[in-house]
Length: 169
Image (cartoon, rainbow, N blue to C red; front, side, top):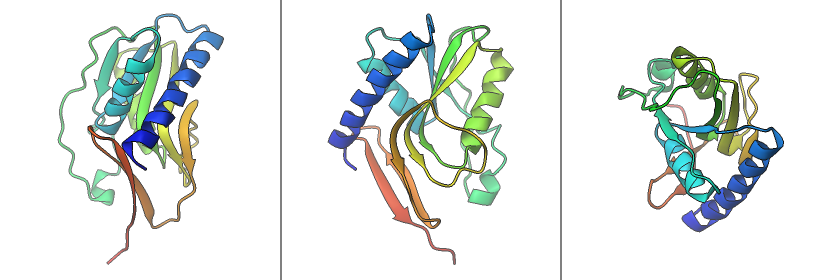
């Protein structure tokens, strides 16, 4: 999926997000993107919204419980949340929702900063294979992938989605 197709998905997501915010009476929401792909998507959504929202970036490296299992070595940098979380409506943005572990980790970190009124989850891609009972409120595209297939967002400019087959051994 190329940048143009992603732009169309982001246009639709921003419309759905505007409607969701209005329908749920979420005044003065904040938008937080999960480092790195979620931050890229949050920035693109924020550019499309009728009113630009205060934006932050969440680095969840301290909160993941599976980095060694999935072979990742996170570069730990602090989150950038230049606003008060307590009692606020949060729009949490990620690139791909798969197992739900990233979102669980992100919520753990958000609650370390304060207790928000609500958390709305927006994802560019929701793929099959959830381990945790986490569901996005705003979904750009749903993908049914095989167990050995993985989707990755490349970017930030241009954005592209890549589906790869991962073989053990």
